[in-house]
Image (cartoon, rainbow, N blue to C red; front, side):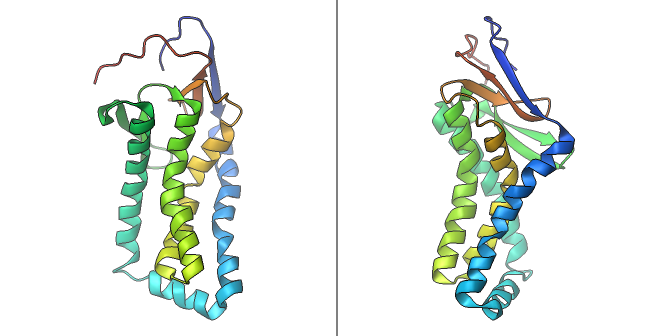
Length: 193
């Protein structure tokens, strides 16, 4: 966290026992398009699609590549919208979820931070799921559903920080799920790479 000389520091911190409850609606929303798939193409096509996708030569590599790409999209978006080199983006590790995560080491405008949270869901979840649903392509639809559910943490973070003004500066809260935000730009943004 960067010290703000004016003292205008605000914190949003969701208790760890409530994070999964906050994620649950977004996981459920991720699975809802499955009903549309069944409605449009029938339950036989749905089951056949699952069988096509859940094979060892397809699903594990897609899962691994998608996870790496998900985090890379966070990194790329934070770097582009933050106008900083990728060296200003760090990899952290949350022991509670046993997963690495990407975060900028400097505060971003709230709109930029939210965009960085949404891009992996849009690119890996919503886009392939929509294309797969329109074209009845299970190889796009089911990974899109999975990655939409996988992005539930990003979506719930987006929701939890929604009341932060768009022009404020925010950063990931190092103490847990949430953010620290500043009404004005912190003065000591010159960081070492």
